[in-house]
Image 1 (cartoon, rainbow, N blue to C red):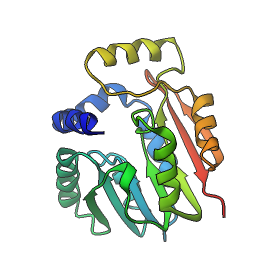
Image 2 (cartoon, rainbow, N blue to C red):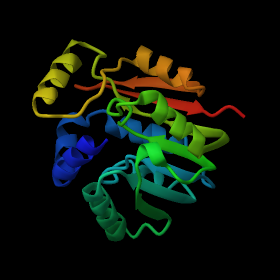
Image 3 (cartoon, one colour):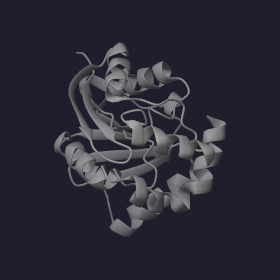
Length: 204
């Protein structure tokens, strides 16, 4: 994912601004994420970016390890953690394909599954990082959910946005189920680019 890493390094300082345009579904998504995290949970967040989702995890979880593959994104994330004084959040640079810790009560990977070139490998890694019976929270932009989303997705592609696939909610559920995870909830949150919030569980 080297080419993608370069892209996210370039846009790290502008990411929060772009989410003001495309992140209309995020308030509801953050509410759902927070609801599905237990107060005693050890949480791994993959592709944490600048910490937009970390902010919803931090008040709920006992411990959060927030990671991203982009060094520039991790720098933005670390700055947010310092400013906020989040003592239960650690940050680290990690490749989604090479997660080196496991046994987490909850694994969160927000808005990244549509970006990964090797989706089965990515999902296998997320499952491996989750304890048996643990939760996976996988909110994902659905670029193929309706006509407007398809048009916006095509426009983003012209800018070099590194999307690997265009999901709708049905195909997203099918991919997660095929990985062996048990989907317990799916809610499509409306927006210019809708986000399908998926709560799944690793089998015991």
